[in-house]
Length: 228
Image 1: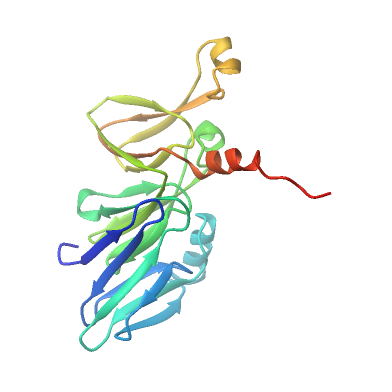
Image 2: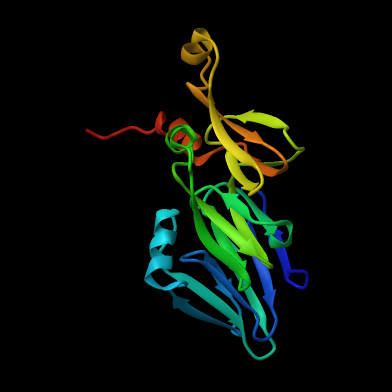
């Protein structure tokens, strides 16, 4: 959405600030709002009815969405990141985007929020993101949450990269996602990368994340003590 006035503040735990014009509306995941001006009105609803709510639940989000609309002269609303990482704006004019579960933060009204189902059994079981992905299309802007830092890559036709299974943050619909078994017995059992890698084949853009939340919680758990 070319006339959307926003800024992303902070580093490890960033915040998104959006200046809403009169009658301009954003919708966001439940609980994402940090603060808003008096000139912003909030409403809660279920986009797409019960079926739409169930699809959001399957994609790792709450069944309800919050809608923020500028009133009078408009106002500012801010959304916070859920965990350490970055906030990425995705322009829907570049095409449909597929994102990891629970990545949605907020979007303009002209973005359609749906789900995509992995068609390949192996990709759904071992690809790191399960069978359900978040799918965004339309003509506006969606803001997603990426774990850790973000690396954006542009893949040419037939160009392939192999990625640790949980490091895929988002990719354009034209990118093919599959899995490959790690080659070599020593690599599989001693290499530390597991038995499978996710393969992404162009053309299209991909957004990779450097610290998947699964990896971070695994690292932290080793330092937690349980009181007996």
